[in-house]
Amino acid sequence: MILSDKKIEEYIEKNLIEISPFDKELQLQKNSIDIRTSNRYHRYPKDIELEIEMLDPRNPYMNILEQDYISDKGAVLEPRKFFIVESLEYIKVPENIAIYIQPKFRLARMGLQIVNTGWIESGFEGNLEICIYNANEMPIRIFPEMRVCHIFFEEIK
Image (tube, rainbow, N blue to C red; front, side):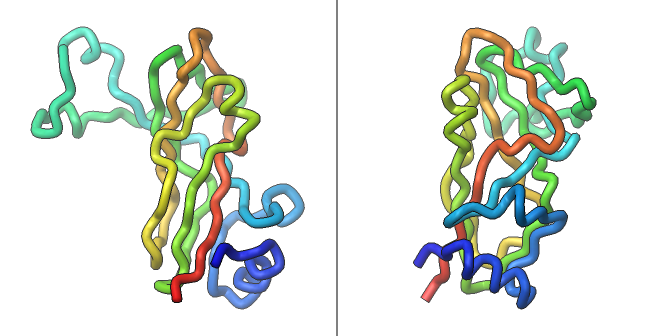
C-alpha cells in the first residue's frame, strides 16, 4: 500500500521514516515527498571521453567518476550527457518500507530524465544518488536544492 501524505507525516513524526533536511510545506505532496539536489554531483572527466570508445563494466574507467559542485549559478548539463546528483535529503526507512523514485513531470517536459527510476529496497539509509540525463538538444541548468524527483513509500506486508 502506497502511503498517503497523512501516513507519511505520521511516520516521520514517529521517526519510522527519517528525512533530513525536510520542509513539510515545500516537499510533502498527496502521496509523495519531493527530493532536491544537493550541491554535489559526479560525472566522467571530460578528458577521458576522447580516449575511450566504449564503456565496459570490467573497464577501470567505470571507477573514475569525478566529483564536482553545483554553484548558486547552477551547473550545465550538456545535451545527451548525464550527472549523478546526490540528494540533499538523508533518508532512512525501516525494513517494512520500500521507496519508489519517480521524476518530476515539469522537468521531463524539458527533456530532463531520471534514469534510475523504480524501487529502492526496504531498509534503505543514506542520500539518494539520482542519475539525471539530458535528452534535449539544448543544455539544461541544474541548481542546488532543485526538486528533481519525488519518492513514494510503500509498506511491505
